[in-house]
Length: 477
Image (cartoon, rainbow, N blue to C red; front, side, top):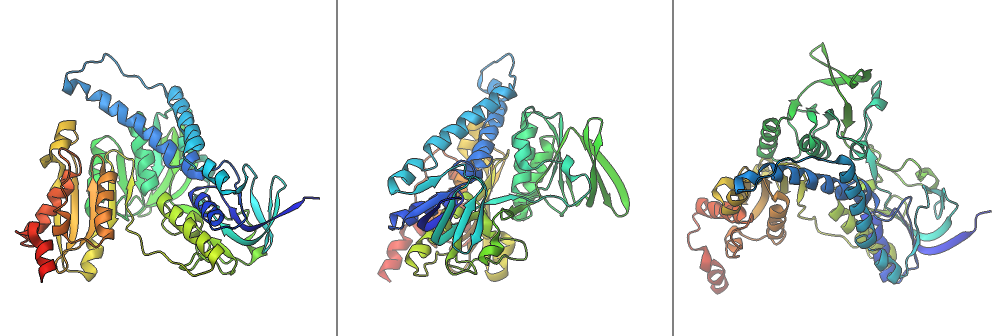
């Protein structure tokens, strides 16, 4: 018979949400146990941002090697050893797992950790069993089990892999079909195109990166096409996949016309589901949304008062920084029961593509619904650092409220786009008027100068010619 252990708080899942939930609960004085199916770190460390960014770095280095001659550096030949690259990916994942997933902090905080415990499931509302025989009874439970890829419900879907299968390939495929042009799909397409695959990117909607600003979507599609990626938007609907001599063939239909396209491999990246299949939520009475995510309120509490949830399993912003915040909030309310909430975050979102893209705040279309705005766009080609680095393609777009002068949104395509967006996120979170932002000296020459150029253009459109003394003048009035 399995022995039962007890805890004040049990956290299910060892990704970013789970780790920070466990740390927060333990530091608040709760006896805390963390159960994780695999290793601490979750998808982010094992097959998410960490390995993806490592592969993207290899793609970046190949690109830079091709441009060395522009700086007087001659190399005879550059060859990709994909096996050695995969070794490097494993090295990085292991090092991150050792040093960057807060394992020592968990130990110092007194968290009881069951790693590689297998799938956890509810036995009753307070009791959790795991596949490896751990039984745990807890007063409060925080669900941080993460997410999993959304499969295509079509015949032959098993012939097409997920993004996880793409990152696990042991060789660069000669050709690759990528179905779905959201953040994950464009990363797969961009990385493997840089590594040498002939890539075709399919998007059922009218434009790739549908949640991005339209200028970003249009520019990214043009950049991909210029780099050799075939981009097929509004392609119709998929009827299924079938085996082909070269690998796999996708059958699709538009306007009653059936078409087929083949490649060595196919990857489906059409969305992300809550990973709830093994949790047996029914035994606890935990409700889910129509899309299968665990339903939570503003305090991260589920339909069961003593059960909380955080991270991808809730279907909120499914990104590492937000998982961390949600885990912290869920644990705070689980231990202290004080109904804490967090202000809506200014959420910088970007992707490790070539070129990079990033956003924070409102798109132009969103902003125009409720605001009178000015839109300022600064091209990278007018900024020193991109010219120095030979990366002058791209732009920074700022959206500013005409009345308050507050920055409402920032959208960037180009080198270091994610870092640029993070700078603007600080200004947006602080409700900073554009003239106040312009008082911040930005180091030269840096990529962030393009943000300063966009802000200067916005100030010009607002007729702010004396912004240097605006704060002092406002303080005197």
